[in-house]
Every structure is written in structure tokens, then in C-alpha cells.
Image (tube, rainbow, N blue to C red; front, side, top):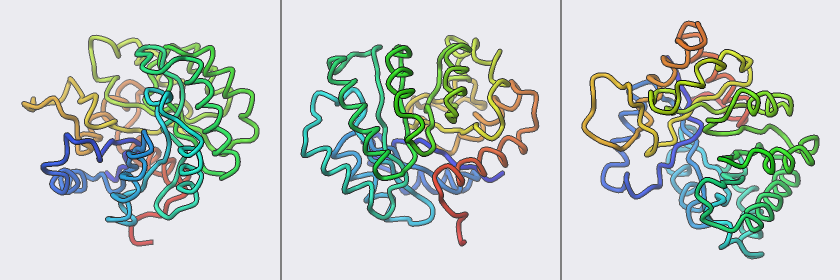
Length: 266
């Protein structure tokens, strides 16, 4: 199977000791391309630098996660606008709202979300969005400008069936992670994963977070890696009643279309 991980935090310090080996294991497992998440000004810069080190295999997003919204300045916006036009950057984000942690004030989160949506509008790039426990505000803000945006993915989706339908009604793509492999909190999603149209489905690890808890054989680490994306695809396929090879082929095609990236060697 040929897979694309649309969201992995490969610049995280958890990978500082063996990043090259992590990438090699991913490719050996069929994960042929990866989108490196930028979640802060510094992180977006690092994501792009890493992407440029392996062109055609790695790509980057550029944005500020809601956790860091309080640090967002006019200079940050200017820098992100510059990044949005640079080689290797394929999406604006990670941006959105997170009322679960509330690491930044909610009014700051909303303002910074709106400002990054404007970057998406002006650049024409796809949007890589984060939402946790903030559906009403997130949906309302997104709905205001959806018709001016390019493609949108609600990454690491963990919400309800009703929330899923709201995003599908806005023509959003849905990113699925190892959350669905967690018997403690992801079981409810299996009831409606089949509601996601095949052409709107994307898969991701969010590494180093969210290692699949049903991974077999068990691995003695809490760190997630892109090499286990296939396990998520298998769990997703079972919940949807589809062949894993079909889900792999479809999500890979979706990712290339969404991020406008060629297949390796093209």
C-alpha cells in the first residue's frame, strides 16, 4: 500500500535523536509522503526546512496552533504570509480553536483563527484546521468565509456525528488519526466513519501523539510514528466495511489532490 500521512509533527524534539531512522521506517512501511505540521512561528520555519531536506517526500504547513495564539503578533502574520508563498509549504495551519486546554485566551484564539483564514484566502492554499471542544465558535467562524477558501481539512477529527455533518455540509475534508484505535475514547466514532464520503477522507498519525492503542505486536514506546499509519487505515477500513487497499488508494489520491502534490518521481 502507498500511503500519505497528512499530519505529523516531525520537528518535535521526540524525534531529535533518530529522525532519519523514523523517516526510513515510514517509507519502508509504505508511507511515501508526509506533511510536516507547523504549529508556531518557529515550528513552521522548522517544518519548511525539514521539508526542503527531502523534496517530493516531505512537505510543510505554516501556521500557529490555538495553544500559541497569545504569542501571535503582526510580525507573526507577516512571516506566515511570506511562508505561504515559499517552496515546500502546501497549506496554512495548523490553526483553529481549542477550548479543551485553553492555553490561550479564547478571544485571542478566535482573532488569530480569523487572521489565518484570511491568509488562506489571500494565498489560495488549503487550510489545515484544529478544533477541540469549540465546535460552535469554530463552525460559525469557518462558515463566514468558507466560500472564499480553497480546500479545508478538519484534522484529527474526534467530534460527534452532528459535528461531522456540519463540516461535511461546508465541503470540508476530514482527517482521521489513531484516536479511532483507542478503546477508551474513540469507539463512538466507528458508528459514523462510514458517513464520510470517500473523496473527503484523509489519514494522519499526528505523531508523536496518538499512537494506536490496538497496535499489534505491542511496542514499548509512547511515541507515535508515521510507520504505523497503515494500522490506522486498517482500523478505519474495518469500521467502514471497506478493503484497506481501497482506503489506502483513495486517501492517497485525496491527499495529493488536496495538497496539490505530485507522486514521488513525477
